[in-house]
Length: 59
Length: 461
Image (tube, rainbow over all chains, first blue to last red; front, side):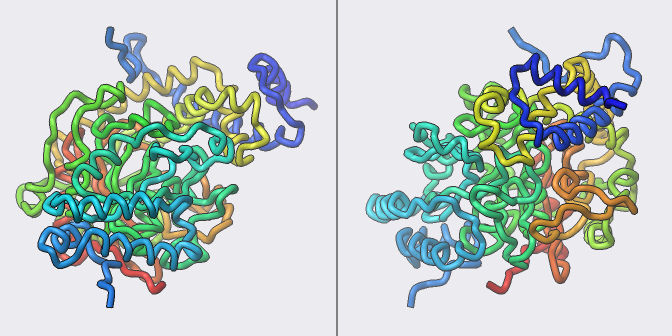
């Protein structure tokens, strides 16, 4: 069965105009899987709607 | 016979020049000779600025400038600092085609204004996305304590040059641990100041919201000396704080009296090899640090730093990834391409978490002046080693050497990496202070040195 992450990488590469050599696919996928896992670790932490991001723009 | 300055401190060299015992030129020649002899082994330097260094030294000697605080002190910088007349490589092949830098980084200019003499540019992991000190294009930086071992990175040449006695002082950058990791694996002192303390203008960036610059030395006093001379606002770096110079050197001898020091537990002990815990225990005992504190959600902080690094790094390099992807180190390229594909909401979540985490950690500094934690999970791995066992699980070395540094720089806290001279290889402990309290971390580092617990061991080269 096709891995949806492969389809996502192909679509994202096209959307970003990133040429992707097929030989790089496995390493990019492994790195993306790790990064998304870390992102999920952060995203699952409950924070209130009012929580502000760290960088604050000053006019 | 020429004087040997190999293992002298920056402060002692400056004193020798100030007192007329040595000329700035003699010190410079000594450093250049040692670099020529040892760099083929250590691969720390990617450029030696010999003509510039000799000209600077002669000018110091001739111009009566030998009373300056760093008179005649040789230093070198990671090759992501702009050096006038050289391309700023940032460890890459791609940047070799860049126009030569039109001016020096302000940190170089500030050190040279104080009498220091730049002798060259130092090897580093490509675009600073690295904890090993290996470089595909220039070859690996080699650890002076064991040439078959990593220096740690990404400021690998900075670690090797200072630990090998090629220079008493070097500069590097630290986004997630790139000063503290090589300090640990090479057994030297490194200061990652508070985010925004030292100007990053005219250096090649990596992750704007996490990048710091700072010094390496073989003792805490030299770190403080150089750090004090580099402080001060700079309109050319929008993140550089509008703070006056807050000197740390005059406070460094105050000892540990009155300081409340705790040990980081939980996350910061998980995965640590016995040598990391041994070094931590020695420092904790000497510092009378009896309390263990839990830095809340440190694993999530590390995860958030990982996400921000991958995505901001990808944004920086997006155009190069489109046009010159084959010219990157594949290990860097594939991480950056993956970073480009992370959905934006997940990055914003990481930046929101960052503020929450900052507030929680700052609460700990209401009770403690400093927190100590391991700098790396282990001593230097072998060059080329891909994996190690962390808490019983085989994990890749490259991203995980920064396991303990990443949650700290994530919120910009100042840290001194303090080396403990274990055998066969040294390892460092992080002394972490509240924002803008570099003086506290440096004072503790110096006290540990005075107590004989911390020291930069001299390698057999």
